[in-house]
Amino acid sequence: MPLLDVRNLRVDFRTVAGIVHAVDGVSLSLEKGEIMGIAGESGCGKTTMALAVPGLLARNATVPGGQIIFDGEDLISKSEDEMRTIRWRRVSVIFQGSMNAMNPLKTVGSQIVEPILLHEPRTPRREAEARAEKLLDSVGISKKRFSNYPHEFSGGMRQRAMIAMSLACGPDLVLADEPVTALDVMIQAQILELIKVLCSELGLSLIMISHDLSVLAELCDTLVVMYAGRVVEHGRSADVFREPAHPYSARLMNAFPDIYGERVFTSGIPGYPPNLIAPPVGCGFYERCPERLAGCESTRQELSETSPGHWCSCLYPRRDKEGGGIING
Image (cartoon, rainbow, N blue to C red):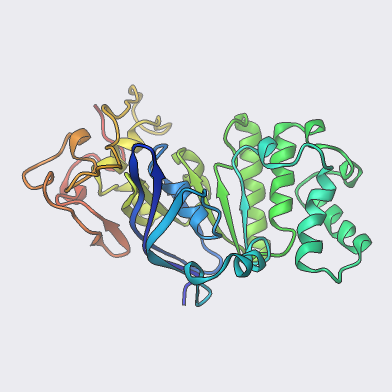
C-alpha cells in the first residue's frame, strides 16, 4: 500500500471573478521512501495540490471532490483538530521563501523546539532544545547559532533551518515547495545534496515541487508534470526526461539548455495557460500546442499508459515521434 494515494482530487477557489478550478481531478501515489517531483509553470496547481495534503489551503478554497489517502486514512474527511495532530508529526512542509516562513520575532532554535513541544508535551524543554541543536548540526549549522534570529542567517542557512524544522517531529512525508528558489547555484546544489542524504538516512518520502526541471532531474525517482490543474504526464524521471510523451513536457524541457547535446537556443512556450474559471472542454494545452490535431480541442483525454510505468494524457502522444527528450523550435 502506498504511503500517499491522491485520488481524483479537485480544489476550487472562490474569487470575485468566479470559481477557479485550480486542481481538476489529480491522481497520484507515492511509495514509502520515494522522492517524487512535480513540475509545471506557475499557476498549474502543483502547490495547491500539495498543500491540500496537510490541509493548509487558503480560506477561500474548497475541496469539492476526491480523496487524499495517507497511510490508509482519508485526510479530506478529518476535522481541523485531527489535522493538527498530523501536521509536522506525520506530514511536514518546507515552505518557499524561508524568510517569510519563519517568525522574525523568535529565534531559529525556539521555532524548531516549538513543534516538538506541541506534539510531545511531556518532553522536557532542555531535551527538546538538545534535539533542535542536533537537527541544526545535521543540516550543517552550528548549535552556537541556536539563539540567532532569522535575519542573522544567510538565505542558504535559513533554508537549511527550515529543513531542520520540517524534520523536528520525525515525519513520514515531507512536502518541499520550491526549496531552492532564489538561492545561487552553489547553495542550491548543497541544499539538494542535503535533502537527498537526509531522505536516504531517515527513510523519508518526499514530494519536491519546482518549475526548474534541472532540480527535479537531480533529485527525484519519479516525475509528475502538471498543466492547467491536471496531470498531463508521469513516470520514472529518467523515462520522462529521455522520452517525454506529452507535447507540453517536451516544450517545458526545451526551455532548458542541454549541456550534452548540440548548442542551440532554448525556446519558451508561446501563448498563455487557459483561464481556469472557464477551463477548456478538451486538452488544456490545445491553444499552445504545435502538434495539435483533430479532436484535441473537444476531447478530454484521461491518463493512459504509453509504455510500462509511463503515463500521458494526450490523444497523440509523442512515443512514435523523433526528437527524444528535447525538441527544437
